[in-house]
Picture 1 (cartoon, rainbow, N blue to C red):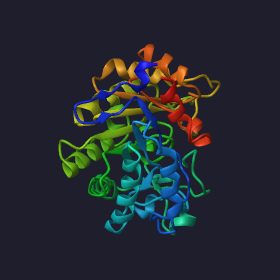
Picture 2: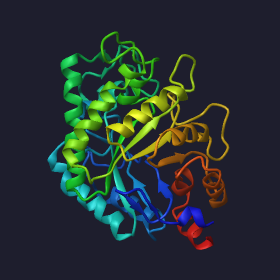
Picture 3: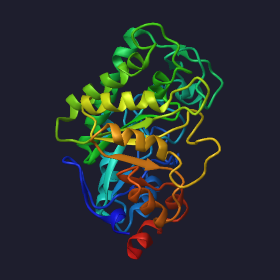
Picture 4: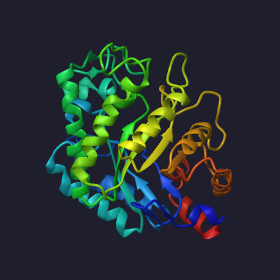
Length: 331
């Protein structure tokens, strides 16, 4: 299985192999979102052996108002940098690269957890909301603050020693809410056609790129299809992906499902391959495909088929921390 473990160089990020551990929520952080032994031990166990080329952390909230749940890690203030440095160092000691995923949950935030009003593009509840609050539509002034919040979070990730930052724009969270016509009913410059619905994404990318410079890799996790009537289609995501690459994104992490991480009726290995393949044809930057891969041979088949550049293996590694190491030994 040479392709899964061959070095892959993007020009800005060199991976030991083509295996990625995608973000998987643990809810293990301290009540204030800071690191603790339980969270560090989890990432230590999962990355041990260095067989995973890139470990993408679970999503960390960039502002208290964007917190999704109790136990979610924070990157919302400089006080978190020390703990995040410990996390990056833990993964590096095991021989893997790591990207910190940064996120604002928008309408999927929890008022019970944050004590703050839930906000979103429109007054439409996110399908992945943890409460029953109907969000208040963001004002233009509030939207204007969001790119800076992402940029500050990215700067903290860079300061903490991470190899990259991953902007979360999937799974019913804020940027995905703007992208989806099911959740974005705005009639101003941030709504309407796909170009309006990705205006905030492009502003976020520009702010992040300015904050971290040209040599620090920026990934974006794209919810490339809602898989719901009237929702985002792959054609929208091809347009978005081309724009994101032009704006400075170095790698796209392709996923789907507005109602969670799923493609209804599909459980086969690489069940988002129709999305990653279409986007891979349209861009020159690498794409990651995650979903349904349980065996190394399945990952190799998807790489051989040319539908992706890297393979994310989540649930198999979650269930078996030695999965990646054994796969490497079989290669």
